[in-house]
Image (cartoon, rainbow, N blue to C red; front, side, top):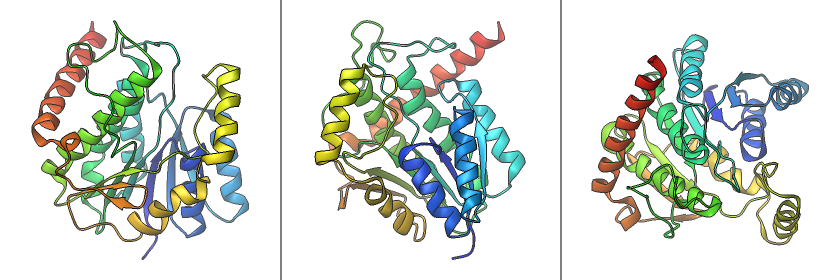
Length: 282
């Protein structure tokens, strides 16, 4: 396959960084999105050391405005995007509200992926073999969408926030595939417990416990990224929607992939985004 243009959110750390370096080593052009200038600079330098080239876009993906600025930046950089890979996520032990009044996990883990998926659709549609890979928790049945409190103002916990946003990503894939999947295939991919992720927001004892557990039980980053690098990107699926939990292909009839619920969430999401825009104009 010829050189491809790959956009990676959360591309400066963990699995995103590993994928970025793997793709530039193959000759692809990578646009990596992240919030840390230092991590972005290290990624660019490491790519250059292996004769590759990464373009770093700094952005606050917890905000609608920040995510839309990424869509604009990518549009200025290229007319064609061959693949969009979505990694960006951060665990928050306590509820954090963004500058736009949104719960941070919902904004980063779900809304940024919604906006990037739909916002980059025109560029993806110009590719001969486009694909979107959303790295989340497809196959997980715990948790639910809190329809009466999407921002978790009343009963926040880090686990509840992660499960809700993960479920929202499942539904994002279903809704996106229904609208655009015939032209831009969508892959929901659960890598399982992986030695990856930003633990800096967690208490020190929690970070230590997770790192010990990761050494014992988690998959290496390279193993978790391999199905994306050597599979979904090199040979995008022909089906509008594909759901994979580690190496297992999941039936699209799962209750967590209900098209009616996906349509309901898409409607609520658009209403929420309109409210954010109106609030920003005041």
